Amino acid sequence: MRTLFLRLVGVFAVSVAAAAASQVPTAPGQTLDRQAGTTALVFDRSFLGHLAGDTGHPERPERLTAIMDGLDSAGLLDTLQRVPARRATDDELALVHTLGYVNLVKRELANVQGLTNLSTGDTAASAGTLDAAYMAAGGVLNAVDAVMEGRAKNAFCPVRPPGHHATSDRGMGFCVFNNVAIAARYAQQVHGAGRVLIVDWDYHHGNGTEDAFYDDESILYFSTHDYAAYPGTGAPARTGSGNGRGLNINVPLSRGAGDADILRAFQESLVPAARAFKPDLILVSAGFDGMRNDLLGNLDITPEGFVAITRVVTDLADELCDGRVVSVLEGGYRLDGLADSVVAHVRALTTAD
Ligand SMILES: [Zn+2]
Image 1 (tube, rainbow, N blue to C red):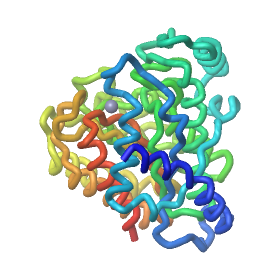
Image 2: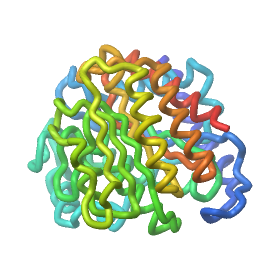
Image 3: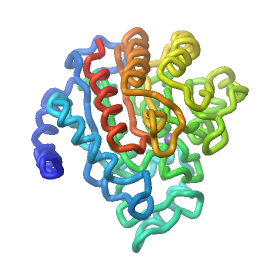
Image 4: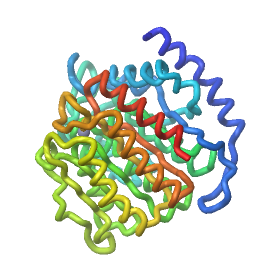
């Protein structure tokens, strides 16, 4: 299977060339000549070069190997439009992060021997981390380009390191750069997206994303999470401030909560808020550590549950923003469950109307 996986990476360049040939630039709101139902996939080998700890650390490269093998075994890999990753520029990272933090990351992670820890928090790093972090952030931006330009209807980005805990000036919780937050700002600045909805169903609260947009009227942040878990943020009373009041929605789930519980949160809280907000793009912080028997999480969500909440998101996207969804991997640590959950999620993306 590993050999097959590497072979598939090898044919990647051919797929990219074919995808580029079908490019149909459009702007939001225009009638899109998009390839109906096309789901893009952004994967790069550099994402495997990041080590977050010693052998056995849950945030490990094998997570992505399991995902890619799972997509292949399910017959989905050949149906996805491969979009290449690229390095984010420092200016793009600075859409969310301070240049001081970007420079700190470059300084501390430039010449790592073995393992080190980012001085800002609990994020371990290796020699491959700096490249992976830049490629992950930039890869998601390429997915935003593909979806906003109508080359793909939606996209899934299995990237590492994850991002939603990273604040403007602090990497923490396995995260270096906040891939989804950067993508939201990029969609606004480069593609003219007026309003962006961020749906975060990771088991943990995305404190970095909440921080980035807490007083922002142009970003709606919706998160389900275990409030008792790391990092201890995500109180429902935190609803936003200033012009962003009402646009930060935290819905804690009880430990052991399952498919019906998270689906209810989506239907009762997300759907009416999204309809009132009318986003031009939906980004998903797709963490799967709420899955049954995850190594770090304490929820009980099955692949069918992830399909159900994916459908809520794609139905909203079809209703409100011409189907535009870019989904980005965050957590999820039991390898077989991660693969099954991602396959179910991606299949739901590919079959969105
Ligand atoms: Zn998580």
